[in-house]
Image 1 (cartoon, rainbow, N blue to C red):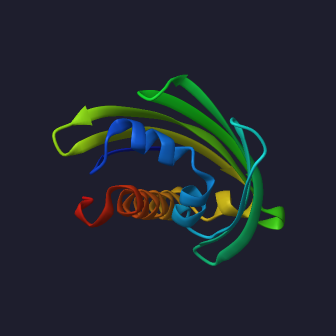
Image 2: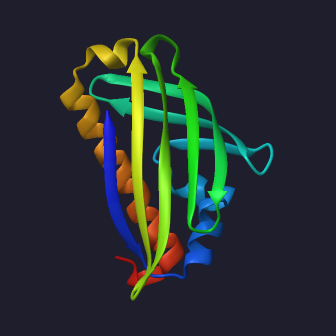
Length: 150
């Protein structure tokens, strides 16, 4: 499954990049996030509760950040286990560029799922993933760009 989107955030590029590396901001923006711990500048551990259709699961996982060319570009990879519900793993490429209204954030994310989640059907899972991504980025834009975020 692949997700792509562009979001304009009403803040300078370096502020957006710093926010994408701020555990408190990320924890607030990730839907269902119960815990987010920074082990190093590139390693995070997360506990997230998600409901996909009839399946509700608590995922524990790790995220590795790779700052390719800060503050213009970075990538991340992650893997989580939801016990009987299954697993999820994937990654994202994030590009930031200056925009007249602040910063244009462009991302491409790929995910792979297994277990009960995979049995729910790709349409339901993809729809849920799109909603979660949209919720994360709208919340992130609000946190970073203030009231003028859009």
